[in-house]
Length: 281
Ligand code: SAM
Image (tube, rainbow, N blue to C red; front, side, top):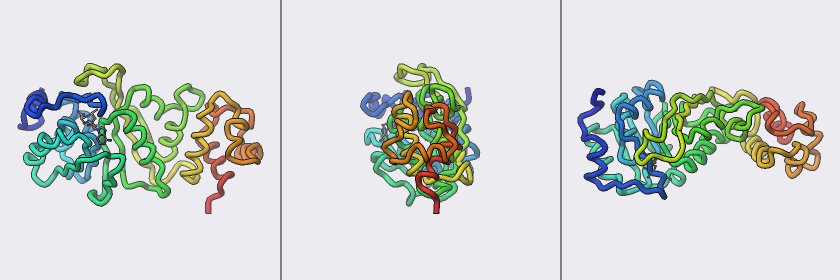
């Protein structure tokens, strides 16, 4: 195994700065720098890019991103205990790492970033899903990011890439595949993390499409799929009746049988339904 940088091993960093993992912050750290460099490579060519990293923790993935040549890394970390360790990395890579201490759900990072931007994160899963949905549903497209490379629970990763007719198919699959090309690029067993989580993980890579696969208003499509999959066993005429008094007409106009269930409906048909409910300007 080769060394990716001359900074101390992560076990020593964690011991020096007393970064015992906190469950409340979803802290399962990656300590193998060859693995973090490998994850960084899944994000594509970083040399001409700013990278937005969420949840750097002691900095394993941050070091991977910098060693793989990221032009700049902007790292948002909620746990202030990690700042001294992250400052040491910033000193080793002058001018290339900026750290902001705060909650990624509340910080708007755009003013600190210069395009092209790639997003890379190993986050607690609930925060990761919430951010993913936000990144996929801005009103206008293309978004501020060129790609997202995100660690998820394996089961969530499978939901992002799922196809119609499968149990995993739902809101995440539709929102992700509508505006991006999504694939699982790496699988990791619990033992890759310290402490090990209960479940396996996977890295999903999403490339933003230049434009959505089918036209639709983002907010309407989000509302339709949330309602449709919230009661996924019901027929769509029942699960969607709160959206419009004429929901059966809209379903038929979109080429969907009112008796179908959400699981059977393609992305293209959901977009047609969103357009029928709210025609685009
Ligand atoms: N990136 C590091 C690694 O791969 O070893 C740490 C990963 S750990 C799974 C998740 C990190 O996200 C922790 O450092 C945690 O403190 C941080 N975090 C949790 N919630 C956050 C939030 N809302 N905003 C920013 N960082 C958060």
